[in-house]
Amino acid sequence: MRTTVGIIGGGPAGLLLARLLHRVGIDCVVLEARTREYVEHRQRAGMLEQGTVDALRACGAAARLEAEGLVHQGIELRFAGERHHIDFPVLTGGRTVTIYAQTEIVKDLVALQLADGPPLLFEAQALAVEKPESEQPVVRFLHEGREQTLTCDWVAGCDGFHGISRDAFPAATSRTYAHDYPYSWLGVLADVAPSCDELIYARGENGFALHSMRSPSVSRLYLQVPNGTEPDDWPDDRIWDELAARFAIDADWTLGRGPITAKSVTPMRSHVHEPMRHGRLLLAGDAAHIVPPTGAKGLNLAVSDVRVLGRAFAELHRTGSEQLLDSYSELCLDRVWQATRFSYDMTRMLHAQPNGDAFESRMQLARLHRITASRHAAAELAANYTGLPLPL
Ligand code: RFL
Ligand code: PHB
Image (cartoon, rainbow, N blue to C red; front, top):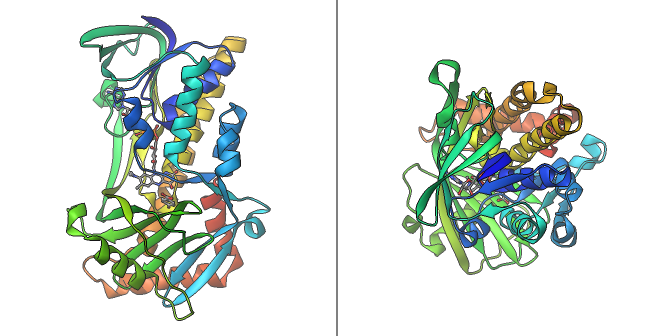
C-alpha cells in the first residue's frame, strides 16, 4: 500500500487528522490496532475546550455534539466545607467549555471516516516505522493475519502513550521528561442524574474527588485512590460513601446514587517527549505527551497538535512550503509545557499527599484561597482551563 500521510492510531488525534487532511484533498490511511467496538467504548475524557469544539465543527463532525453536548459556564471548587464557582465567561471574556464524551467523538469521527473518508483499517497493528529520515518512510503492520507495508511521504504517530512511533526516534536526539504521582483515580460511570450543573473539583481531607457527567441521566465520578488499587477493592457502596464524604459541605447538598455501570483505575503521570518530529515522522497527542486528567487537558492537547499538523500539511499541499512542518515541534511544545504545568498545579493543589504532609496541605489551602479571593488568580485558572490560544 502507498499513501501521502500514514496515520498510526485511530484515537481522537489520528481520526481528526484524517478528517482535516481529507477536507483539503490529501490522501491518507489510518491504521488502528484495536477493533471498532473497542475504540468506540473506551471510557476516557469528557471536557472539551472551545477550540476543540470549533475544530470538530470545522471538519463537519459536530452535529451530534451540538445537539447533545452540555455547555458549561464554569466549574466549582470545593474545599474546607465551602463551595466556590469559577465563572469562565466573566473571567475569560466569554469562553465556555463543553461536556461531550470522547467515546462519542470517536464514534462520530469513525462514522464519517467510513462513510466518505480515506481508508481506516481496524485490527491493523503497526509494528515499526522504518526509514523516517528518508523521503519514503515505511510503516510495517500486521493485518488479516499477515505482515504488510504502508509506504508514505509522511507518517503521523498518533498511537497514544503505549504506541510504537516514539521508538523510531533516535535516543541521541530525543529526550523524555516524566513525573509519576503517588496516587491514581478510580473512575466510575453511574446511571444517575448528576447532582450538579457544573463539574465539582473537591479537595477532601481524605483525598480528591471529581463530579463530572455524560448526559442529564449519566454521571461520571472520580476518586483519588492509592497506587496499586484494583477496581474490585472498592465495592459500590464504599465508592458512594467515600464520594459523599469528599463532596460534603455545610450547605444543603446531597449526592444522588445509582447503579455503577463501569469502574476503572488510572495512574497519574506527566510525560513529554521532545522533539515531536524526526525526519518525516511527526508525533501528535498522547504519543508525544500525557498529563494527569485533573486539568482535563489530554484530549484537548491531542486536538490542538492535530490542528497545527493539519495546517502544516495543508500549507505543504497548497504552496509546497515545509516551513510549518519544520516548526511543528516547536509550535506545539510551548503549549504542551503550559498544559503540563497547569495539569501538574491542579493535581498538586487538590490531591491529598499520601504521607500526610501538613505543610503541603496548608500550601494547598493557601493556593485555593488565593484563587477564590483574587479575580486575577481565578482568571489565570479560567484561561488555562478553557484553553490557551493555538500558536497559529
Ligand atoms: P489515544 O486515545 O490513546 O489513541 C491512540 C490510538 O492508537 C492505537 N494504537 C495503535 N494503532 C496501531 N498500531 C499500534 N501499534 C498502536 N498502538 C496504539 C490505540 O488503540 C488507540 O486507538 O490517543 P490520542 O488520539 O492521542 O488521544 C488522547 C486522549 O485519548 C487522552 O489524552 C485523553 O483521554 C485524556 N483524558 C482527558 N483529556 C481531556 O482533554 N479532557 C478530559 O476530561 C480527560 N479526562 C482523560 C480523562 C484520560 C483518562 N484516562 C483513562 C487516561 C480521564 C481519564 C480517566
Ligand atoms: C470527565 O468528564 O471524564 C473529566 C472531566 C474533567 C476532568 C477529567 C475528566 O478534569
